Image (tube, rainbow, N blue to C red; front, side):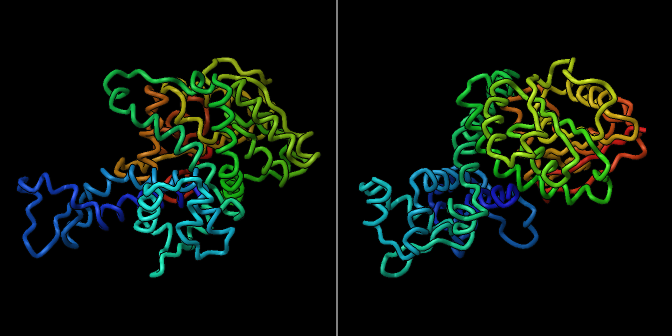
Length: 393
């Protein structure tokens, strides 16, 4: 679902640029690079097949407008209202359900149609596209609109506005300072939970050929957020217990989500307060079969990454495994786009962090004591995340 979310946002921006926003570039018509002749409307999209690997300047530059249209549609309940009515909903009905009667609602609906989130009939009725019905309607089992609306729209979107200042000054809040606000921590953790459950299930399948949990009894989930991965792992393996290390305010929200899990899972999952940048962990050495770090290595300053892996090495039993799952680019450092822009987003809340690639993770695992020749790398969410498995001899 994370891959689908990113692809949807990127495509929305590109489609809006191609389907009506090119006129906004007319002011730059004097630039030689944009003089494309009378036979073709002014556009910065690649001209022919030979330029397919070139940038679509408009698609990238205007992409934020399309993403905000999507977020506004979610906030106003547009997708839920159309789904609840069974489709074919007219403008007056959407005005009543959203509480917006001014012409600006029509402007929003037109943008959502242009981006293919909605479809408009000749008589002015609105329906959902297949992807909108699947992913943006709260009653759908594939819904992750809360993640898009709350985490991406309300939190990360605004942080990205500070990117240039962070690049110049190196000053940005840390996740620890950001999450010290209970409301921010609760919003982030709740929004992340549903998407993390789906990712945790996929991770179990991906690691099945490399790591067996049949005989494992203890798991350490570092930076485990809501506890989604621990709930999925312990739910699948009834002999397994998991200890989650997280920031205090995140633990508070995580415990409320833990209370919603089956009773046997609640009994085998616990939270302990920890700032991951701390050199000391409140856990015994050599007692864990598995240490999981999902979305944590890219969220701490670069010097801390190696220390995290060293602490994981100490906590593991001989023969234990460290699982590092995160947004990563390829070792060639030329993509994929999803992993690259997520790493850039992390800069706005982790100015001294490391843009992750498998070899960077493997080298730091080796320095921490893990068997260098045994490290494994797997694709997880295609184009976005990878899984690196470290082995303790």
